[in-house]
Structures are given as C-alpha cells and as structure tokens.
Image 1: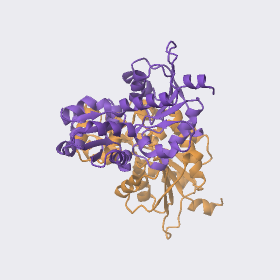
Image 2: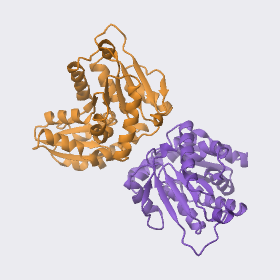
Image 3: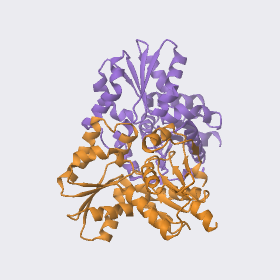
Length: 274
Length: 274
C-alpha cells in the first residue's frame, strides 16, 4: 500500500455486537473524514460472560477479517475484548490496534479529585481487573472499585431503558458504589452510555461519569497523526461499511437509534472461517 | 456398530448453554440406564436472539461433534434450535434426532380443555411460529397465543430468580396472557422451568403449566424402544459426559444447581472446527 492509499484506507472497528456503535458515533464526530469498516459479532454476542481464551480467539478471527478490508488501524470498541484480548492481539498483527480501556482509564485518572474511581462493566471485564491495573499503573494512589452489572446489556437490548425495573436493577448493582466516596465512574461497557441518564440520576451530580468512547476517538486521532495516516481528502464523502456475523434485523434497528445517519445495508460474514 | 454396542452407545443432548440440563435431568429420571453426552454451546450462547441460518449452522456443527462420540440418538434440548433447525438437520444426518417442541406441543394439546394454549419462549422461537404450527397441526381448533420473554434467560443466569424485579418482568410480559382465557401454557425455553413457581403464582392455579422436558424424555424412551436401542445393562453405572464450547466456570455452578448429582469435569471443545 503506498502512502496515499494508506491514508484513505478505512479504520476497522469491532465489537461483540451493536454496542460498539457508540464508539463509531464518537469517531464519526471527531474524525469525519475517516472511512470506517465496522464488524459486530452478532452471531456470538455477548462476550461479557465468556472466557479469555474464547474472547482472544474471536478477536483474532475478526482482526483477520478486517485486514482483508485493508484497514490502516483497528479500534476494539468492546470493553471486554479490550480488557482480555488487546495485549495478545497487539503483538500478533502488523496493524496498529487500540482498545477502549486505556483511554477510559486515563480519562478517569484525570477526572478524579479524591483519587477514588468506580468502574462498571461485564463479568469478564471486571474479573480481568484490567481497569484497576491500568489506572493504578498511571497513578498508584488511586483506589478503584469495580462492579459487574451483567443485566444492563440485556435491559438495553430488550428496550427496557426507560422501564422502572431498570431503575431497580441500577440500584441493586450500584448501591454499594453510591455509598462509597468515589467521585468518578467509568462506563466500562459500550452499552452503558445508553443508560447514562438513569445512572447519572441514581449516582448524583457529584460524580463525574466517564464514557471511554470520547477518549478513544481522541487516541485514534493522535495515532493517525503520529503515523501520518490521517485521511485529509475532506472533500470526499466518508464511507461507512457495516458487517455482522448474524443477520439480526435488530442490528439495523439499534444502529439507527445510535448513529447520526441512516445505517445502510449490513453484510453478513461467516466469521468462523477467518 | 453391532447391536450390542449400539444399545450401550450414549444419547447425545445439546443446548445453546446450560438450560438443556433441565432436559437431561428428566432423561436421567426416566431413563436411568442410558449413557449421555451433553454439549452446551457456552461460547455462542444465547441462540434466542439469532437467525435461523445461524442456528442451523451451529446445530450442524454440534451434531457432527456428537457423532464423533458414536451417539445412537440426539435430543435437541433447546427450544430455539428445535423450532428453527430440527427440520433441516433431521434430513441431513443418519442418526435419529428429536426436539422438545413436538413433545411440548403434544402435552399442551392434551392439557387444554378450552382449546386455548399460551406459549412463552425466546424471540427466535416465537417468531418462528413453530409451536402454533405444530399444535394446530394436531388440533386445528386450538387457539395459540405466543409471547417472547427475552429477559427471562438473563434473569435466571444472573441469579435474579428470587428477586422482586423478576416478578415485575413476569407481570410485564405475561399480563396480556393472564387476561386471555388460556388454560394451558408451555414453558417454551429450557430456562423457564427455573422460574416455574413465580410464573405459576402470577398466572394462577387454573392454568396447567407444561414443561416439554418431561414429554421429551417420554418420546426418547419410545424412540429407543421402537428402534430396539434401549440400554438394558442396568447393573452398570450410567456414564455422563459434559462438553462445552467455552470454559465458563458458571456452567458447573449452574449444572450443580440443576442436576441430581455432582457434575464432574467439563471438557472444552472448539466447536467451530466441526
């Protein structure tokens, strides 16, 4: 690939399903000139209840698929895959790969005044302890409280965002975190920004809520700049392609509630072949 | 395989994850002399939100794996896979395969006095309309009301069986069914028997609740008898093997709450290779 081709090559973004679209939305906002190829592993979603080996194997297959699209960089938009697979795949592939955990951790380190940060995520993310490790690698004085909230994803996906049971389940999961004296909280799963207002109203205004998507897009911008890989042909219309491993019509429905434009056709890929 | 070997060959049972163990439990009760090989697709669970093509492909892989264990018959313990894949795989493989939908439908047809049956299941099961098709094939006068209850599975898996929000979600899903005049209701997902007492107390004593697991074990017994395949060496200890596609420790935890004996080690299989 010559340099010109490389700059117009797309960014690959992947997630276990639809949640990563909240990261795509942020990349589109901050990097409107970049082309994007998105892959959502809708045949094998969710990742949050699965093991490290399985999540690494799935991530490797997806990266091999994205490389067939000549991506110039890859964003793991899924917190679970970022926490469990980034270290493994980063050394395995010759394309720059970033996840959402490091950017999210950095934002929380900047946000906390009292050196006390809360992290909510899937079972797998919380069990990995990766957020704690990275935050304390940045500042060993910060205390981190992690809490798995495994019902948040199905509640969002089944359209219970505004239902009263969602408030009760938020209280069930977050009561002890509310009673602690954290002053910053990371939404460590790409679905959780969709519950942001309910989480905010339960946790109170004092707590800064960190959505890693924003910082991840910033990191991507920096990566492209440093590598001289940014696409500067701003006159051209950016091109977005969406791939999934299962033909769930839900993908498009959900995508159209998240994205600032109509999501066109989605293409189905047999990801197990990669 | 000679006849003697065939009779001592195991029954293959599979499910998207752990739910099918409620069917294994019933087979163990009714057919204590049979050996069983169980496969739970814990790497790709759940199936209930996925498409027909994907569920057929997953089922084919699992049947190919079970055939390497020389099973003499296969039970699809998952309602979603029974509803969407049984027709396809039954004609494709040279081993007898039964699902849970036909036995469950038959039990409901026998149970209803007023010719009005309710069915609850996953999105995919309900969208397939398979229960309605089969019930009305048995008795065209029966009216069938189907309702998808997609949050029941995560509620069971996340340990919310006894939580008050589960009662609220039961009411949310089942209110219209309660207000209809059904007198029999099929628990059309293998997880739902674990919510049976809460569903029963919401729906009231008038309604007969049908768990297809019982009838499925009866059908299996009949199949083995007709094919002269039953294992009659009752002096020997029956042997149970458990395979999963992901090493979720949850599998064993859950299995030990469902099965009448301690579930020994589980073996991990890379099911995508089949």
